[in-house]
Length: 207
Image (tube, rainbow, N blue to C red; front, side, top):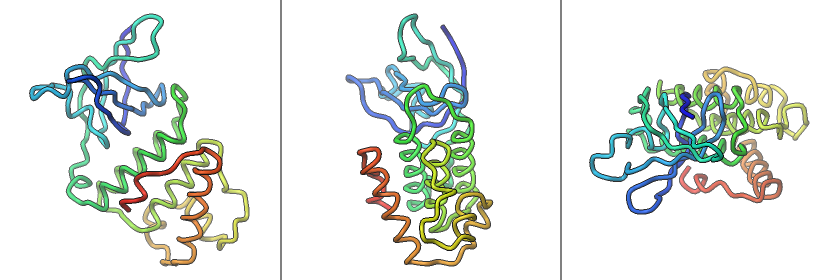
């Protein structure tokens, strides 16, 4: 079966000598582990489509009885060049991708999560960036994944809590910096991933 879908690359890892396994979060089918054959060769034609923080229109081939598609083509829509030129933005984008990857089982589509990730990357690409952005992103991703705390009192100002969950990005960027609130959220999210999911967010080491 051949199918096409829009997708954002969350991560990739090598497979054999010249291939890659690429985690793609697609609009219609959710998170897929995709084989990119021969992409590590110098002339690998799908290399750009296999890089983390890339957005494209993909064509996949899925063999009958398999859940492991092969990428056979596609078109790059954006590699977010502005993000890649700035280290803080790039690490933040990788953090967004890791959060989505860890909160999402395979083949479980969520349009809300897809649009959240794509919207956040576009905001970074447009130059929108703040210390609050990643906190807002992870809270919204948790909400989309069914682990949300939106309607739970966690000891933070209600206006701040509402903005982090529902405010447009410019409103999030304009929030007053509060080390106390940020540390609280940092520990809250860390405990959630470690205790509820048994996982650690590796990209936090670089942010």
